[in-house]
Length: 363
Ligand code: NAD
Ligand code: TYD
Image (cartoon, rainbow, N blue to C red):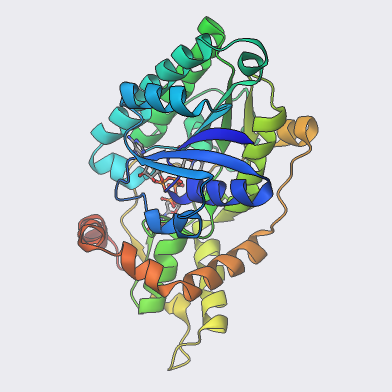
C-alpha cells in the first residue's frame, strides 16, 4: 500500500485530493492540517472511519510533530497543500502568510530532509516532496502577452503571491543544495466542491442564492484561467508518479474568462437550476465595488510541458465544471451553512464594507 503525507488535506484542494486518492487505488494517507478557518473536517466525513486515513490536527511549522509523523508512518511522498491561500486576507493581514507559507514550508522541508537523508535504497530513490503552488508567483499579464511558462520570471504582486514565491524558492533550493527530490506545480485558479465561500465562485453562488449584491472588483475585466479542481488533482497525481525531481510543472485549464463572464455564466446556471420566485435575473445583483489593491489583471497558463511530458490535460470544460459545482452547492446546503460561522460573517462585513463605499454602480 502506498502511504503519503498530505498537508492541508482538510482545505479545498487538499480534501478533493485526499478523497480521490482513496478512490483511485488502495492507498493510505496521513493528513496533517491545522484546521484554520479554511480547514473543514466535514469535507472528510466520507473517510472518517476509513483506516487508511489518519487525520492529525497540527501545524506544518511544528518540526518535532512532522518528524515524528514521518518516522512513524514512513510515507513515500509528501504532498504539500497547506497554506494561507486568500489574496484579500493577505492584503489585510500578511503575517499569517509569512508564518505558514514561508516559515511553515521551510520547517516542513527541513523535516523532510532529515527523514529522507536517513532512508536508503529504493525508499530513498522513490521518495518525493511535491510542493503545490500557484501561477500568481509570475505576476500579471497584459492582454496580448503569451501565457506563463515554467521559465516566466517570478514577479509576485500580493503578499499571498510573494509568500508562495518564497516557498517555491525554498523548495527549489532544497533540491539543488541537498538533493531532496522536490517537484513543484504552479496551477491557475481552481473551482469546484468544498471551496470556502471567500473565493469568487462560491462567494457569488452564495450571495446570488441569498439575493445579495454580487461584488465585482473594479471593472470586472480581470482575467483568470479556470481549472476544475478534479483536473488539478489528477495533474498532481501524474506529477507525483512520473514528474522529474527538480522540475516545475505549470497546470492550467486553457479557459481564460473575465470575472464578469464568470459571474454572468454562474447567474445563468442558477436562474435555470433554481429560478427566483419572482423569475428575476440574478445578473441584476451584480454590483461594481472598489478594486483590490495591486489587483493582477490577467493570469494564463501554458501547460504544454505537463501535456507533452506526462500526457495530462484537463477533462472538464468550464461550462460543465461550473454547472457541476453550482449543483454541488445547491445539494450541500448544510455544508454551506456550517462554514458560515460568526468568523465568516465578520470577514464578509470587514472586506465588503470598505469595498461598497467606493462602488455601487451597476453594469
Ligand atoms: P485552502 O485555504 O482551502 O486550504 C488550506 C488548508 O491548509 C486548510 O485546510 C488549512 O487548515 C490548512 N493550513 C493552513 N495553515 C496551516 C498550517 N500552518 N499547518 C497545517 N495546516 C494548515 O487552500 P486551497 O485553495 O485548497 O489551496 C491549497 C494549496 O493550493 C495552497 O498551497 C495554494 O497556494 C495552492 N493553490 C490554490 C489554488 C486555488 O485556486 N485555490 C490555485 C493554485 C494553487
Ligand atoms: P479569488 O477567487 O480571490 O482568486 P485570486 O485572487 O487568487 O485569483 O478571485 C478571483 C478573481 O475574482 C480576482 O480577479 C478577484 C475577483 N473577485 C471579485 O471581483 N469579487 C470578489 O468578491 C472576490 C472574492 C474576487
